[in-house]
Image (cartoon, rainbow, N blue to C red; front, side):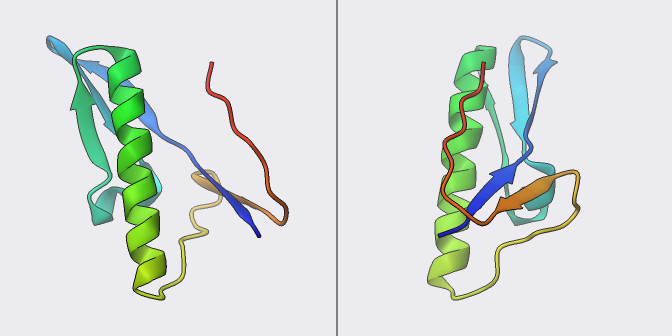
Length: 81
């Protein structure tokens, strides 16, 4: 089992927060939230759904660009603080 770590961006956007995953943006990894925490939670869910869809379609998960995706050969747990 490998662990994929996708960089996400969460930034203010007028009266709410905009969030996206650069490596998966072309697949629809864009969302928003009323708070920064809500936007982060939403983008985590979107990334999870897109990864599941890619795997169901038996396609390869992106590993590029290197500064946006990190692949570890072992299971890991990520905690955003």
